[in-house]
Image (cartoon, rainbow, N blue to C red; front, side, top):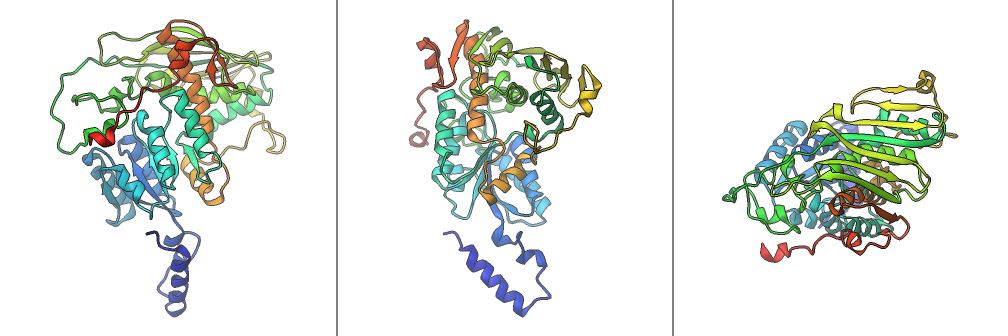
Length: 433
């Protein structure tokens, strides 16, 4: 049962009246333990631990209380880091995320699992009355809509755990484009690394520290193989993820789509080519050259560079307008422009056509939970971003141009393509446990 925070505050105040010299002022302030947002972290790989849990620990107005992973060794690793950062041994371990959701003392969960778990787990968390910050992307178009509808009006916050909208270089590119610094935007080029091709593996015994049924969850059952669960492998297996396009794409294409600024957000057409390996563990597009058209006439090309896997130099973003261009030729690189004066252009918040740069996603999430305002990257935005990327995956899978109706959120006159908006029926993983 969750302790009433007002009672805790009242008790703390009474104690302070008797022993004012031994209680730090922060205990009775806005960051007092009774006021902190309690967080359970689920999925403790490198992303969940280093890029999500650790940033939360640095904020005094929240407390990571539980770490959870179907792989106990991963949870123990994360727990050790949390204990070192906090200087205590208070953080609990769970292997079954349902125990985290059932804990009434936890206000919010951070989901850093493989993609196939994102929406099912987020919906279960909402049902358990939790706020949610969740890694990207969604696994299908239809579930993205379901996620958006579920959180709309729920009183709970959903924040996609994506940092790009608070990254100064990406923010400035969108700001300059939307404010007309290069004239009317005409086309965008997005280059990303290609995917890896992974060979099939023979089944192997499940490690004692892993709950293989929980790791697979709603995905189709597959016997355990030695590297199937690793990030560089599951990302290229269709039942868990859709590969390179939806991985880095949710970063670079999100920035591109913000700058396109189409009223309907998503494109109306996609065409292109790509390679899906045969008889491999990898069964998603590893190379791709996609051409999107938006309803406002802007064209976007999304294609792979020479590098395989994560490579900052193969992450390029180019905007071409009627009066100039902007380019960022690697993920961590600077911006160049057709006229250097563009790079010195500033806009007043009151008149700019783009929002003020927000704080990083973890801080933004905490602020949204505390104030009730929308986060910078809500469920609907994640859904629309993933829709654009999955349109490209479906185009390659079917080998033809696809037309999209952004208002109805369906392909135009293509029953086979529309069937791809949905995931296969979920496995009854709870019954099979």
